[in-house]
Length: 145
Ligand code: CMP
Image (cartoon, rainbow, N blue to C red; front, side, top):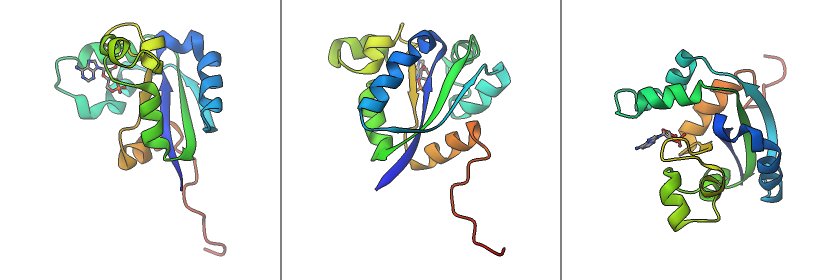
């Protein structure tokens, strides 16, 4: 069945966003919503709250607030798993060795700046889509209520 996921083109790959969007469409995804935003450090911390306290958290926040990003709500059958497969391993340097065709291997910069984000599960996808697209209607609203 059709599922939704949140994709982010991160600051280091925004200049390649047209090329990346072409690949997204050719891979069978529909772009349901799209937003270009420049996150403040506070907003980036909020989005990545689950990583608070980890060693890489301060540099992750600096990276994600360093320039504009493109947030996209993607839909496709098994969108969550398929988008993660397409972007590949988190660490760009490892991705280049083991999955040279994945998007992070192609567009990523280093072990921190990995060009793309994808929700890692159903509840993360719901939360992350709402983070960037708070007005999106997920369930049909019953008439007359
Ligand atoms: P993302 O999939 O968006 O989720 C968390 C981000 O933190 C990750 O991509 C990387 O950009 C960054 N990061 C940097 N170092 C690490 C690490 N050791 N483990 C996980 N994520 C990391």
